[in-house]
Length: 187
Image 1 (tube, rainbow, N blue to C red):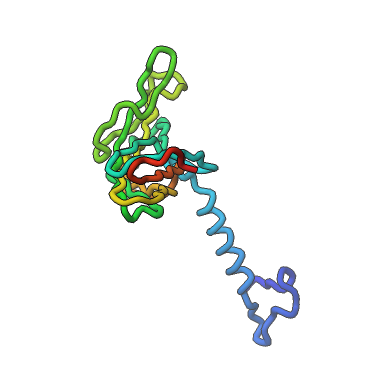
Image 2 (image 1 turned 180 degrees about the vertical axis):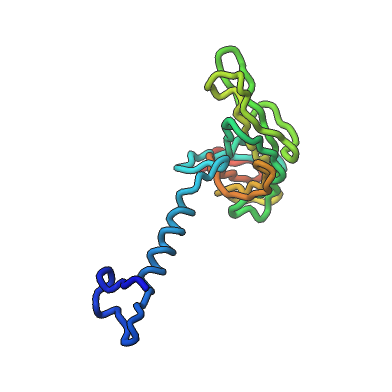
């Protein structure tokens, strides 16, 4: 048996010569939790989100890119579904994927909408390190009642490397202010 008295001090030693190990267990638990916290959240965005405020008339769909996924070399991502998180009672939300489109010298995401489920995202190994493979997750919010509707995060379900995963994140917090007629602003 290895003595832990030098590490924990004599007060931790029991009368039978064994040593209490609550600190050791706590240190291991902290190390494991810290390791879990350092995991790469890819493809879910992290960091500070920007904001979009859009006035709308009741029944008028509002679309906005709320998440950007920039593929990395490696396993492909297959999008399965998305769910809006936020105060949305009184509005419906549909999600679409939107590939990046080169428009002259600009890269545009959000113009072309495709069904989200089944979208495949993978880096083109022949492409240079630009954003041409970026895919946007577009939210379409349609209010049926007057109110303020906010998408604070998106719960994305996807396959990555064959495993089904789920994560929450957002690049753009979307606020839709709806009324009939449409409000002039949304602050």
